[in-house]
Image (cartoon, rainbow, N blue to C red; front, side, top):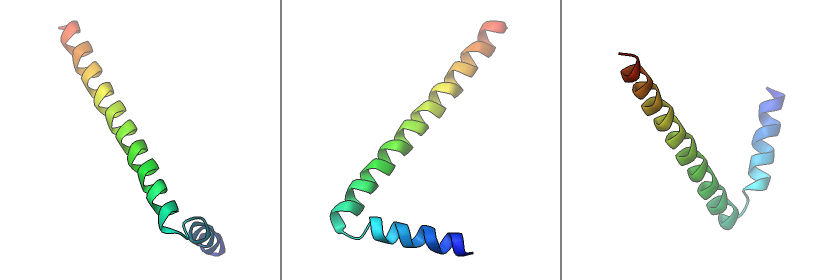
Amino acid sequence: MDGLENVISVLDYVLDTKRKRHIMGGILLSVSFLFGSLAITVMTIKNEEEEDEQ
């Protein structure tokens, strides 16, 4: 439980201004789009491989 308090304390210190929160939100949004597009790519490649086998 003490580790969780430390993580929350660090996040509170890092994101103490509106500008920092805005930048971090943009970074998180970009990362989520990256992983989402990778997942879609993997799913479509998998479907193409199944069609080629048949």
